[in-house]
Image (cartoon, rainbow, N blue to C red; front, side, top):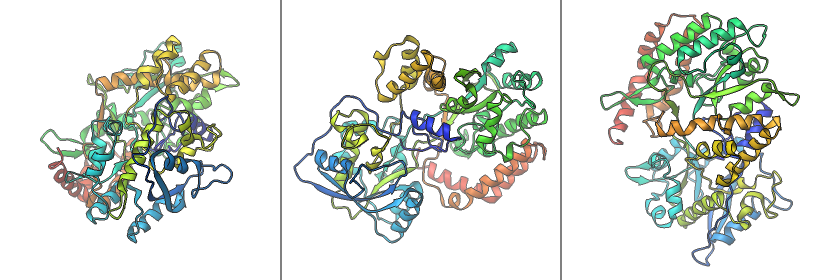
Length: 553
């Protein structure tokens, strides 16, 4: 629920909102834009006293009020007051498109409500300006054991990002960081051409060349690999190249260990040069659309739909995108398989992941009842993960029925799970047709959709490729068990030089990377870029990052 991903088509958007709350980042599917539901018990107020806490809220277009209700008075706010004795008051409500800008103004005018959602830079600035509360004590005292366990599923990394000099200064607005990318390949073409399933980058190159030269799809102009104009962006959940880099043990803008106790930026490492050389070779062979640099994701995906391309990297929800070409007139006309990221050598590829947090709830030093904010946190976690029937008011409103109103958006403090067990549960349940092992609403929703496909409903093909026995989720347990992922070693707020120079460095990086890929400059231009990156501020950023790292290991 934390993130809403930038989807590729209206159809895919609807699919992902059904499957999940898709997010721009990297970020991946939850079951639906609503809290998960299991039988369980909620909370009751510690005392009969009702306390008031103030906040500010975005007016989300997905939120639709029941007749007679508004942000001033609604069933969700009434339920919080009744169940935990916390009255919620908004100092202001702004359209979601204007919300972040208005938060900036609120901070600048020193007019904070009792609690507010801010980004990592603002968290640091508010801490340094002594405008927000050190919540270490109030969190320790009032957070339930469930809450403390819930927010440390990742080993405590997200809480560390909100900790300054040993003081907890915010509540991470968390989401699952363990969202991996996969390789999707036309398995019907593999069978037709008698090709093996891809395990190495050499396999990828051979398959791409075969798809190009033998043209099993009968395309006017076939290619090998689908790529779009923002291939290194976290927003590009399909048709990107981050996972391609990972296959060469190269990573997009991560701070990684240098082997000598320090950190270096992944964008300038020699492994990237190797990956770019491979991409340039593919481009020269006509395996990449020469117009990829001007095509957005949807435009690039058209080559997947019309049988021009049979290989694409993407997130777990990618089948919801592929369905546009795979299912026609009620028939499955394309067969796709999900595979782990192939590797360039005998070492497994590590899928790069984020931290699972980029925003935080902070409490003003002027707040009279900071414990009220922690009560809201406790209650959200309880009703989001195991609500009683009565507590479905937090999801659906006073009639407790799903009608597309997205009343969960009214909860002013929301955190998502840092881990799920979809990969362990769903493939097994679907393969054995055994719903008894399902644990969450997400499980049940996905299982029902996948079983519809098993029973002949081809419109649910995409869910089967996500959650089925050979779907994307089925690959997760091995990735988790073998720790085949790499997370950013720098989890602090942007450093001063980073805030000033990062955008310039990324722009320069993409310019050089593209020129190399498109064979406009030789691969050795990467070496010149490394030196320029350092002079343009990279060395200064590296120095600041390592000063931070020296005190955070």
